[in-house]
Length: 274
Image 1 (cartoon, rainbow, N blue to C red):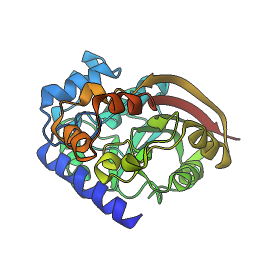
Image 2 (cartoon, rainbow, N blue to C red):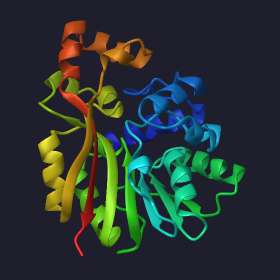
Image 3 (spheres, one colour):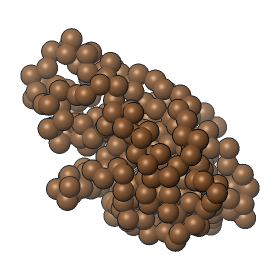
Image 4 (cartoon, rainbow, N blue to C red):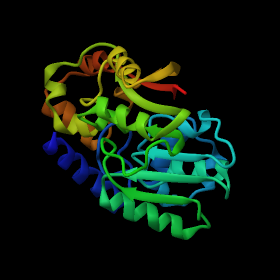
């Protein structure tokens, strides 16, 4: 588990330094700002949202738009698990206002540095970024109204622990809104063993039913899938890192299409029991 975290930290640290997109499914560190914009627009962010945050906040790393679904209210305290460059934090900050607060947690020092730099560019005094692991949140018990997360929990080798920590820090009746990658059927062993595929949010994903069961086991109630869309690996096949994974594993285009049918981007919600 430590080895996986180290590789993920290194890969996403490189993304933060280059301020470039991972191109949706793997860390290519090749994407431009326009490419990141295209990716985030395609998964549900509006033009106005993207223009309202610092350019470097959007690295094109998400698979959904949790802030659009979280029904955030003024004065609420929001926690973003795996905050990256701060995109969702800055959007959440606009919704909770000056009387609210947004905390972003990320385990990558380079991402925290970038997010803090982005915060300094604007008037985001209600946003704070903390270095830490989502399996061991640097957040007090019962202190958060809403948890959001965008395509990050799949990277954790201890997902059950992430959900337990999320439950701990939420206030009674606090809610969560998560966008993440899950599986409809198991991946081929070669993909599961590929660390590049893991960093690209694919090999680290678990079966949809197991994901939902883990949330309920942590104590969450009213767990509900809001939306579910195919995660089309083929559409990213021109990305250099994705192509390298495909070529390195000796996969045909038909095999890649088959794998794509196993992977979905899921948006779900739930709450902590009162």
